[in-house]
Image 1 (spheres, rainbow, N blue to C red):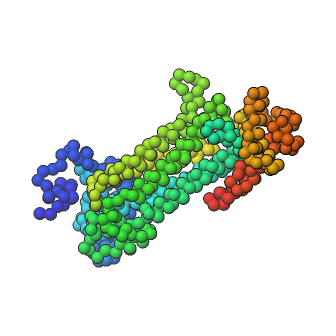
Image 2 (image 1 turned 180 degrees about the horizontal axis):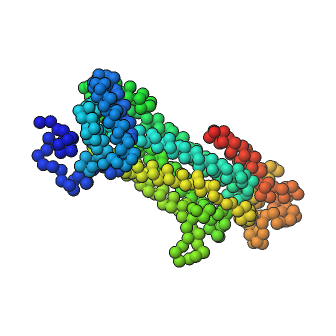
Image 3 (image 1 turned 180 degrees about the vertical axis):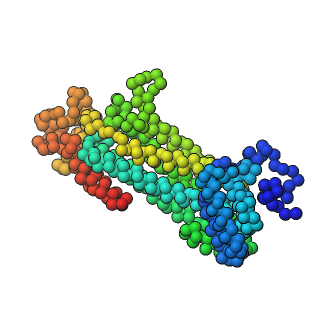
Length: 464
């Protein structure tokens, strides 16, 4: 007696003396979340069937029947008419069972030369590869939106902070470009990760390969994989490519979260640097005056969610002996949720960036607090010949005097400044302006408006 899908709807029914309990079925089934792999599962199966026919492992007639059946299954799934059965456990057996119903023995021959182990590994790689391409495109959209914002405010001055204390004047355009750089590296990481995702496990079968004369390179070419996995044990058992993807995704969310934190702070009335369009905010159920920046706040929270998925996958993998283990069924939900979270976040942030209103006056007022041009005064003295440490000390005394008097450095008279150094001349007042401070940093990577515009042009050239 041989195991047949048509009898108890289980691929291994003849091996067992009693059916799986309903509780175990629910506990072990994955169909209701891995059914999102249906399209890539069919894509991989069609490539496998084409290879089997080319190698004369199945007939051309069987191949044609498999193609016909799969086309109908795709239509049923697209129309929402495909019946997903818990008894069939996962996406693979559900599709195979339906294929067999439609085309008979040809459907039963499709699984020749493969296992669900290499089948699911292939599906996940196809899925992750597609989502990487999608995420890279969304990162491009977000960077373009931030570049528009940066270009509009290449001359807008705000205080730069270290330790959340006023440090030096910068331009808002320069500040936005910092995030453009971060998201650019995120795109690079995703594309680099794609190279290791884009290797074909199909043909590894359960763990040792197959006795059939398969052509793995042909399948790889059909599915546009760059290479095959070169060890059958490794091909079916490791999920490092998914872990690497989640690590890159966690970094994307970390950068989003940092930007979100600043948006939340900047939108506070006590700061008032920006306003976020109403469509990205909510009110309060009790306080009618409230406008809460819910989108950036929630993005901060969702960052922890994605970080948690990364740790979950690392923990999932760390104790598994070779080769495939049922533990790996737990790789999909964290992976799927990571994809959904990153995709939704990037899409909404690209839109939100277009709905940010910058308040230059509030930014400028804040930049005039905290002695933001103190470093410029020190640099001025160094250029006059004073050693930096001596210049640093002289400016520290000047700042202390201004603190005691409640005024800014630029409010001191020339005679009052010369108390701290006889090298100070009338040209100091140009140095101490906010515009003079940012314009003086006119080098690659600097905050000068000219450099901001050059950087924007460079990024646009790369993105276009």
